[in-house]
Length: 90
Image 1: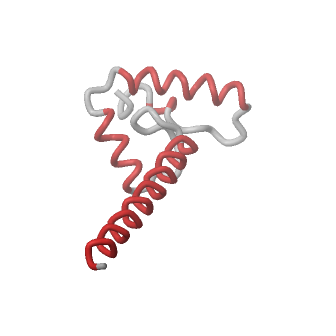
Image 2: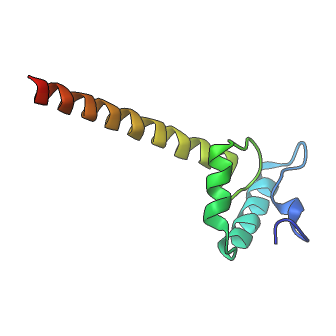
């Protein structure tokens, strides 16, 4: 659906007022909520990473938060694995 009639919902026009942006993003997220490929779209946007627009029901700012959390989780897992290897060796 985002590739057809409602593509304008997913990307901000220049100098869009905050209230209009929030309203447009919520409308885009409602479209995403009905989409059969929402999860795949979200993962694409996270892996690229897509810097603009609503993808997979997330805004660019929300995707940055998800990516930061994933980086922290990956770092913690790496540290835990390293500590486990050291404990086994010692």
